[in-house]
Image (cartoon, rainbow, N blue to C red; front, side, top):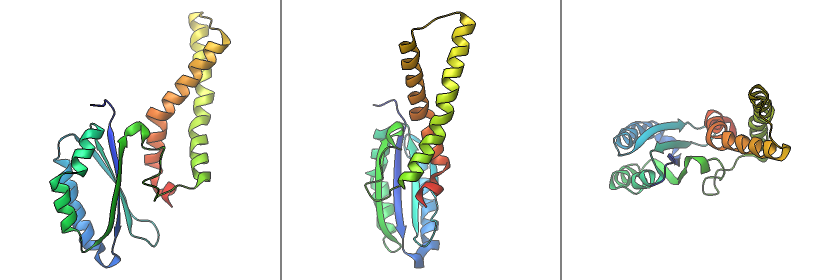
Length: 180
């Protein structure tokens, strides 16, 4: 089993006449996956604009646990129950660090300028702070590194911070804006 958190993004397109029924059903569905083995958290991005498209982000202890939920008889039964109000159900499951690199089954795409802006906002502080902090630590400890090794370490720390911390956090925090 992977040691990475498993993430699933489920997108539901809801029949506008049945939005209230869908939201009642969603409460039942949330309770069901909260009781499923390996469950960690749920985030729901409610629709913005004209379309009733809900994005449900589920986190489990591993991708295997996510897939077990997505293919479970419990979930299949819930989906059968939702047929009158649910127009479409599609999902993607990944490890947490891969989650923000790919669009959801090619259906939900983020504008390139938003991808650039979000990446820049994350990269800027990392590329300023990490070299500054590393230089200060090396100076304080009176260690000396070859310039190439210093640059390799900075690049490694920047990408580590982006993949495991800042990009997952910022994409979750700004998900409504990204999908608008």
